[in-house]
Every structure is written in structure tokens, then in C-alpha cells.
Image (cartoon, rainbow over all chains, first blue to last red; front, side, top):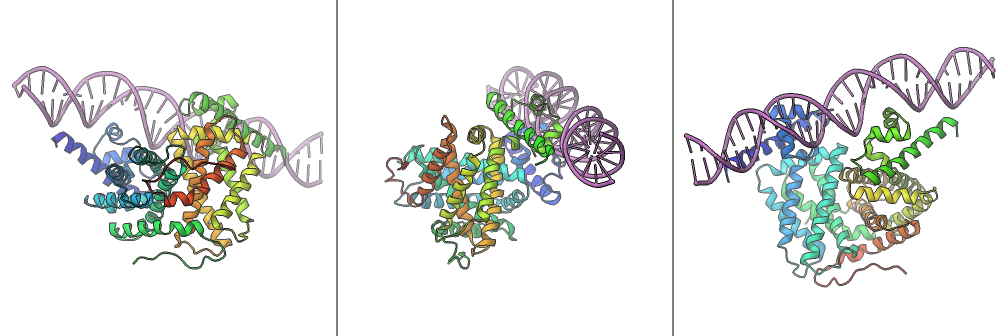
Length: 213
Length: 213
DNA sequence: CCATTTATGCCACTGAGTGGCATAAGCCTG
DNA sequence: CAGGCTTATGCCACTCAGTGGCATAAATGG
């Protein structure tokens, strides 16, 4: 890796870390891009060569994860599993790889905690999930024998994965000491709850359905 | 209803119609708010007293629908149905009421077609769905015996409804002559495909699963 | 060490969104 | 049908996100 690339990557990391720290401390709207760029000693022009928007920099950890997910999906094998099981294992593998990066879990937790109380970040994130979903569907159609654009089932299966992921993140991001293994467990739980969610009946629903072996 | 309220509502309708028309013709980014306000003969200040953002005005038809959904949910009765079935019927009822408004279907179709090719509108819409989901969950917790904030199942059930709704809209908004009955049918189909989506296996998935009796 | 490529900084600009304040339009009571 | 009262509107100036152009600095590769 050349010096130029390393420098660029360092600037990028620096922007992400500073942004997450400042946004968390003073609120997303309480920090202007000029201030952020000042703190990192970078011009605003450079910021926009690295990130597409103010929301983007704070959501970088999530982007990284889903990029890994798509990469893993390219080499995933069905192996008799349900599509949803395969997606689950692919996402878990991506999670494991993302968590290898120093401090990723902490950044991811900050990003999601921030997204939960910042409408524009939430919107940005959810749009990003949507476009990731489309990419995932492209891979599924290309690599596996799945209905095609008119079959709603693969689309719904990916949406369910994303929904379960959001449920898992919601609880995880709030807790102290973000642990990737804990996130993985929460994701498994949320996905395992899908069938019960489908058949849940209002009158009978007693206590919660969260448990981990 | 007082004259003042009627005028305000007329301005609002006029803004929505003009916005959808102009955005569709010249693209969301191709129309500035100044131009839109010029066309409706309203000051920009007034625009922002009616809508919270440029995205908001174009997404008004969707807001209307989900507002009706929440209202219907307040008076819905379980009646032995699955939670998801109850949500489905509630949404169908809301759809029926929304469709009574002159030209609603056309506006809704334009709004969604627009959202599909405008990232910021898609993000805005999806964030709106998220906050509607939260409101719906509040109602569900309050009115029915459902686990509480720690039970992921109701949350997942609402997310599935929303996912199915998006699937239904995606196909419907592209077709010519938007018909509410057609949308209802598509929504039923998408929801009916959920169990199959959950158990779909990559190797075996043959043709599509779209059909309507 | 020099030529080429590529990143950065600076500057001016557009457009979304906000706050303040004067004015006009609808509303209510006698 | 006045009169004051309330509430919406218009106008102005402002902040801040995001973009394009161009000169400059830094890395690369010979």
C-alpha cells in the first residue's frame, strides 16, 4: 500500500473518530462541518472527497459491515440451508471480520446510538440498507436459482434479515461495553423470533421471547 | 370548518400537487423550492410552515395513509386473528379510506415512483416508516397484551408489514393507471408470501410466487 | 532530480432551512 | 358592521450543507 493511500485512509479514520466523538458529545446538529474539519485539520473540500455527506461519515462503520456482507455473499454456498439461514451466517461472518478492526464495535455502537436520535442519520442509514438490499438481491439472482425480480420471497427474506439486524442493534447500541459476540447473539435471537412473530396472536402473547442458550 | 382552515388546506393541496407534477417532470433536484413556491404563489416561509422539508411535501400522500392506519389501529379488535392479519386488515381499511380522497391513488403512485429514484426522498420516507412503526408499537403495547419493549416479536411483525407494503408499492407505482384495489391485492400477495420467504431454500426456488385468485 | 499524476486548499456560489418582525387576513364580540 | 384580537403570511437577513473551478503541494515513477 502506497504512502498516498495510507495517508488518505488515516485522514478518513481520523474524520470518522472525531465525527463520532463530537456528534455524540454535542449532537449531530450541534457540530458544523467547518468545526469538524477544523478539528481534523482538513479542508471542507477534502471532507467531501472522502464522504458524500455529513451523515455518511458517522455511518461509515455500518457501511463497512455491509460491504463485507456483500463480499461474503459472493462466495457463500447454499449447503442445504434456508436462504435466511444462509444470509444469517453470511452476516455473522461479515460481523466477525468487521470486529477484527481495532475499535470497530465501539464506533458501530456510537453510530447507531446517534442514528436513533438523529432523523437525518436514521433516514440516511435506512436508505443505505435499502440499496444494500438491492445489491444483495442482485447477487442472489445471479448466483442462486431464485425466482427473479417478480418473486417477492427473496426480497422479503433480505428485508427480514435487515429488520432483525435493526432489532439486534437497537438493544446492543444502548448497552455499555459494546461486544461483537453479544451483537451476534442478539442477531441470532432476533432471527429466531421471526417465525413466532409471523404467527403471534394478540390475546395470548405473554412474556418476552428473548433468550440465549 | 372555518375559511382560514379551508384556505390553509387548499394551499397545502396545491403545494402537493404542484410539487409532485414538477418533481416528476424535472426531477426532485431539478426544482428549487423558490420555483415551487413561485408556481403556487406562496412564500418560502409559508411552505416551511406547512411542511417540514422539501421531501415532506412529496411524501404527503404516504403520510396521510399511515396516519389513517394509526387511527384505525386505535379501534381495531384482535378477533382471534394473528397480529399480522390484524395489521393487514387495518392497513387495508386505511387504504380504503385514503382512496376515497379524490386523486389520492395517483398522488401516491407519483410519490413512490419519485422516492425510488431520489435517495433523499427514499431516506426520508423510510425514516417516516420507522417512526410510524414506533407509534404503532406504542398502540399495540397499550391496547393488547403484547410482551413489551423487550419482546422482539411485535416489532418484527410490524416490520414485516412495512416490508410487504414496500414490495407491493414497488410494483404498483410503476404500472399505469394506479388502482387502489390493485394495490390492496398486491399487499395481500406480498403478505401471503412471508411464510414462504421465511423457509425459502436457494436450490429449489423455481418460478415466481405471485398470483391472485 | 524532474515530469507526471493526484490529492489538497482556497474561493465563490447555489440552495435548504430558520428567526424576527411588520403587515394583512380571518375571527369574534357588542 | 365596526373594533380589537388572533393568526397566517410575506419579506429580509442569516447559517450551513454541498459543489465547481483552479492554483498549489505532495507523492510516484523513471
